[in-house]
Length: 457
Ligand code: NAP
Image 1 (tube, rainbow, N blue to C red):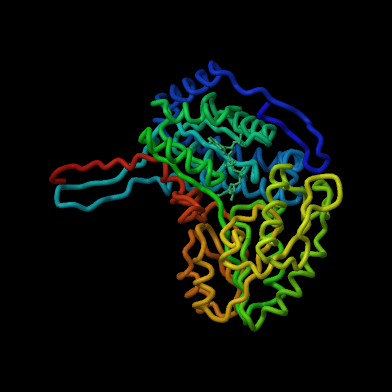
Image 2: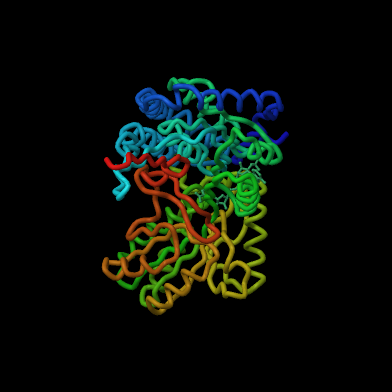
């Protein structure tokens, strides 16, 4: 049984779900494709934007139910689940309010005549999504797709089947017709088969490099456009003149939010030498003091990891890092209690010959580096196969801006951890993937930019 809710706090299996059958998958695809050919996709946008506005309200009305389900399925602390729901409501509202403006035809000047670009839907999209933000990962694809008129079929991660179903139900209750957004419990093999179907016109994946390379290759083989949002090993740079308390507070949230299971979590802390001792002491102390426990307790900041596999893989990674010479400043092992808990951990002395140097730590483990100047910071930051986000803390904004421009990543934030907002395009470079979600850029990924020219006009 591939779709299963296991409560990571109790380690108990809650519910299992059967995969959809071949005929159910075919019926879902046929409905989605029929909708694309109907007025719903091809007609005016008003009806679809009204659905998004209602979806926003419904998410807000159901924020506690959504947060509860996330806590039970993948251990996200309630307050963080509520924050996720609020962000999702904002994303639906953003596209409801802004899509008309973002998608209005754009003039193109030419000696042939009057020209313009129109934005049209392309057809059924397949979205393959991870469990770490069970609702947010879906709405990043679904909200712009509804605004445009692209029907979506999604395959969510096997460990969050209830979140997957809950979201589909909210979309339905918002008034979306059957076929607009469909949740399917399917295997990787079925995903590959669907990508090969002519009715599927694009594929969006958020997930690991392994899944990205398989799905990207399959999409390329079938001449379909794909967007890939994959892992990261984001830097969190603290310059000598940074506000120490603010940097520590931001660093804790950036590393321990969602139990460290964020693609844009701060994974490599690069601290300038002048502030290194003070930052290390304060940061390690704050890591040790973090309230860890029941995700349903409002005081909890650090919940369990989402799965036994994730916990075991992180434990092996840390053991290997230590085997190659890393120093454990705090933590370094599974917490001795029921639930998939890993102790908040800080590792230093991770050298380039340590496999950990280039790995993504998808859990509450921070790597700490010390650098002397801006050139050394940039060299260390860019010595990574990933390039997703990054943060710089400094009182000198001009210097931080110059540094931000030199870091090879899709996003850099100054004096705040990497955050997501509806209007901010999200995505990376290098092995973090390609394409963007959210903002005006994100809605134009799966779109037909149709050129129309009137000669001599
Ligand atoms: P994962 O194993 O790649 O799973 C992600 C999704 O892909 C799941 O729905 C999974 O289904 C599916 N999948 C896996 N292999 C597949 C294949 N060969 N064909 C089709 N579907 C496949 O990723 P994860 O380990 O759960 O998630 C963590 C990773 O995602 C991290 O690297 C993280 O950094 C990255 N991430 C990136 C972003 C971003 O926006 N850049 C955001 C969040 C997470 P099953 O669950 O059924 O295996």
